Image (cartoon, rainbow, N blue to C red; front, side, top):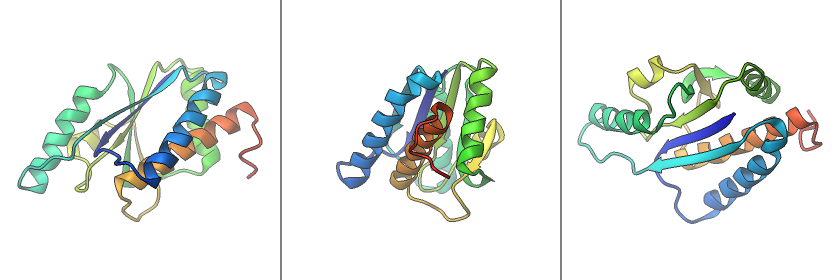
Length: 160
């Protein structure tokens, strides 16, 4: 399976980018043992449109254009379902076992996702009811992907 992270907003040089790259490198390396062929990141600038609705619509078009065909879409949204790390790993396992070719994690801009992006998602995933800046969400997502891979491969990183 191939994983994609598609994000509105670019990570600027700094501690968040270093941490995100570290977890991405770890997840990519160990992920191959779990059946994850690659983890690709696509990012684009946040929309500069004048209204929130216009910004969300523009970002929705960019996200839709970056989605692999027939990918299972996981939209990160505070209104989504919160999963424990083990349940997140089980989600990946189920998709690996059922032959899902592509899974895409979608991170919206400061205004969130457009309604149509949320409606088309296979899963709305929440890291809790708080709103998180995209640069932290990216670190949290990469860490959880890495943690899920360690759970799937029996690596001792996850000791929960």
